[in-house]
Image (tube, rainbow, N blue to C red):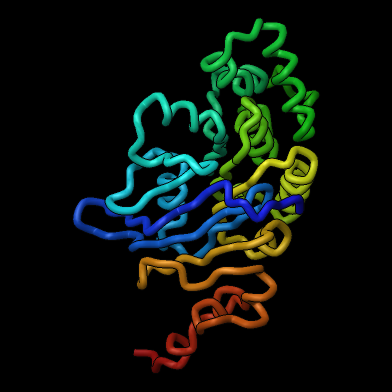
Length: 261
């Protein structure tokens, strides 16, 4: 881990709402430069919602998001687009275009945001594919790849513009344990070699232990952060019953002690 004490992301008193329903209520945390930071929690706690606010897809009802000490939420379009260039995103499904080759998918952000020559863009796309072990798959369509390869291609595309921060939404979802472990190893290697900050949304315990330098745990009931720290510390010294239940893969005591109807 090559981290800096200087935060690259600051979330300050962020409140997220869908209509009248509050999903997250005044949450605050920081992500250090160069670390692998994991957002975890049970289903419906707001993990993916939080990510969407952090990458600027939504504007918070209250609070602010700062990227590299610059306000990202509610800023003017020019500043927003400039800061957006510092971010790469891999969505849960991979979100590759099925009619385009893997190389064309990886090249797409460069087609849109740079004035590089086609040969330069193709070379850069090839470099990104090599980073994730797909150097021999450039000419294939997404339908010709396995699920793990699609995730790797999506990470290569997220790296296309050499971002400082890469967001990964449930990267291990739908993968078998061996493929998932291989993907985790690739993410760790990218973090070490490129110095990229990774923010990962997941509830997969094996990946959390393998990847996270630090994590926060969200809770749907409190609409906030109920734990933060290193995964092993939260496992060994859980601050509350819900955190203990999550890290030990156990049902809550009040659930298992109920008398069946």
